[in-house]
Length: 67
Image 1: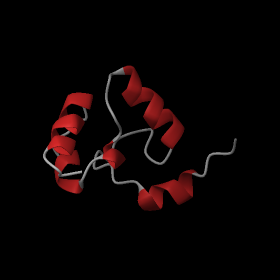
Image 2 (image 1 turned 90 degrees about the horizontal axis):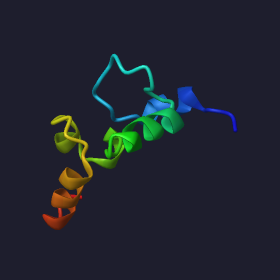
Image 3 (image 1 turned 180 degrees about the vertical axis):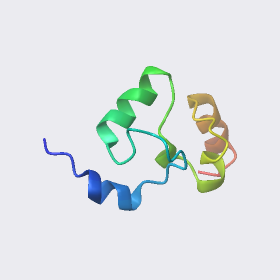
Image 4 (image 1 turned 45 degrees about the vertical axis):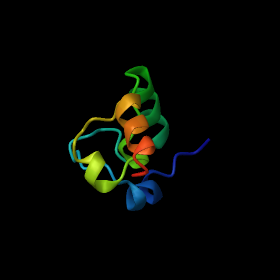
C-alpha cells in the first residue's frame, strides 16, 4: 500500500512538530498502540495538547462526552 504522507499531513492534528512519523499514519498508529496509546488525531485539539494519549484518558473523555 502506498503511503499518502503529503495528503495525510494536511489533516494531521499532531502538535509535536519534531515527530518523524507525522503524516505517516501507519507508523504513527503502530508506535502509539505499542505504548497502549492512541495517536493525537483521535483526540480533540485541547486534549491532544496534553500529550496524554493513553487509552484511559480517551475513555475518560468519552465518558464526559468530550469526544
